[in-house]
Image 1: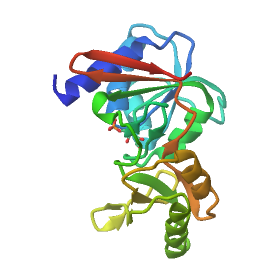
Image 2: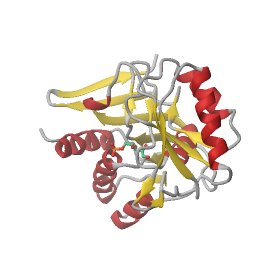
Image 3: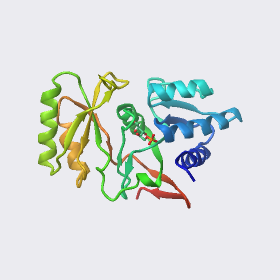
Image 4: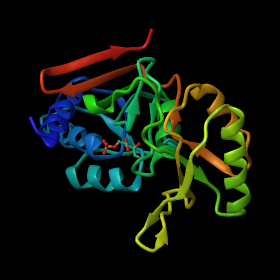
Amino acid sequence: MDAQAMKDRIGFEAARRVDSGMRLGIGTGSTAEAFVRALAERVKEGLRIVGVPTSERTARLCRDLGIPLTTLEELPELDLTIDGTDEVDGALRLIKGGGGALLREKIVASASARMLVIADVTKKVETLGAFPLPVEINGFGIVSTLLAIERAAGLVGVAGTLALRRTGDDPFITDGGHLIVDASFGRIPDPEALSAALHAIPGVVEHGLFLGLASSVMLAGPDGIEELAAD
Ligand SMILES: O=C[C@H](O)[C@H](O)[C@H](O)COP(=O)(O)O
């Protein structure tokens, strides 16, 4: 089974977990997109849901496919968020933000009673950190913020290069108007400590460590779907 087929399979399975009447957080990325396409089929068949998208990109796709949308202002509490991930460990801790949507994704997941994460098995890791950690920062005082990130990382025992994310020659700008720094730490032995250290930096808007948010994870592999649930 190729990578797209695995995404389509997991997207289809995730869409089956949605019940009529649900208030849904809708994730971002290629795996979430496969879910959105499968969800749209169910909506055409009569499933009644309303979704809050986690990015402008997802909002556009949902609108094109006829999925009813609202905002967190209208609906501040959601039943379920379904989203992809860049990495997941055995404790259901995640690194997200490869597509730059981490801030809205985290706000939406935090407003949801449950978060179902969908991915292919290659995203499962022993220790988070091989995927560069996206850190969303304010555009003011970038150099000071980068130095503060380096120092904070050092205090919790991680180090690595920090790269400002770009789109061609220009800095990548998030839906919230911020910048992203990708931190190549390699291994993050204590994600909770790193999360707290990054949150203490004024220029850091949010980071891509999602800790204690995922309720369950469905991983698609060549032999089928593996499901992990939080304790
Ligand atoms: O910002 C993007 C999101 O966190 C995505 O859910 C994540 O990057 C996974 O994307 P994909 O399913 O395309 O690998």
